[in-house]
Image (cartoon, rainbow, N blue to C red; front, side, top):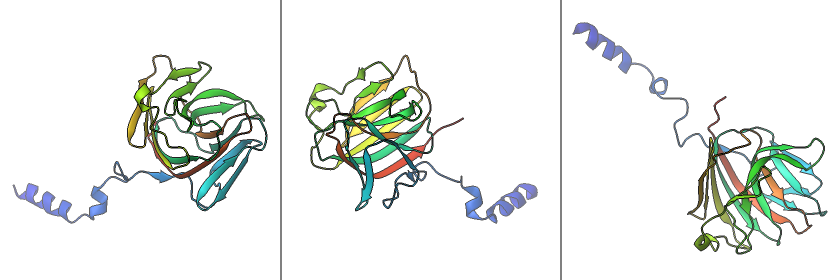
Length: 210
């Protein structure tokens, strides 16, 4: 009994921080965009990416695709991002992405759709050479807000992909035949020359285990 009491006393003397894990769930969000410049990001293609007033501005200067991708690769993650559609162009948040060297041609990766026009399936999944994989429910096609900031929460956990737009669950899909598993995250400007997007408040929880 005396040994047990002594052990308990000694444990009580340890600094509190030594008894806590380095990062608790919910305290492990990391800022992906610093609000000042494009540190940690790489431009792919010839479209124009700048930072103004704490926002990433993506503007089409040609009729080709353009991307802004993270330097770091992510396997499993939770991503929180705000976007605003200024023009009529299509956009998206790609993950597990790879490009043909020296080009904006995607060779691997899926995207969570971003398109503020009604009926264009924002929140749905597209890519990996399969076209559309899953759409939101029809009643949720009106959740997106053109000309306003939209809150987008995206989760990739193994082959389960979840999107939530402005607090509404859009997609919760388990892919029976995944084709991509790791890679950077990339913001897209669709081809056609109409891309004009804004992004801000980009945070990530990296859940990757390699």
